Length: 194
Image (tube, rainbow, N blue to C red; front, side):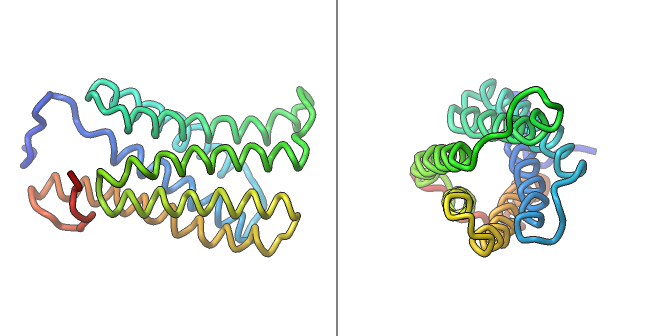
């Protein structure tokens, strides 16, 4: 079986892996945030192995492709997932105290600010990535506000918004795979801005 769109530098595009790892893990966590089930081993395992490690691997490959944006985004969000699992699991193991509510607000707010800054990088990329990063910025803001106010309705709203955000990342990743395999636009991701 041959690939229709040959890879010019001999390294496959890691972005679909990173986007799908981020997207699927985000959808699953936000089904929890929307109130459908409690945090469980499925979410934590996805956070470690797919949302975490797979994104870090994708980011390292982006570095080999000389893509600073991809390196920064994928490795950062991969380590976001690993750190989030640590925030949940380490206190349960009795190794450290659980973070106070204000600490989680700061954590989520800083990730929101970081995401907002990366959003400006997507303005030179495509519409699909703009949607992913724009909706992720909103997600972090809603989660921080939900934690700050202890308002479960805001957290549940964040969950539904997070499902949309994660689904948009999955769409973008799958679109890149199918568009490359078929050598044409099967699923549009919007124009690449120059």
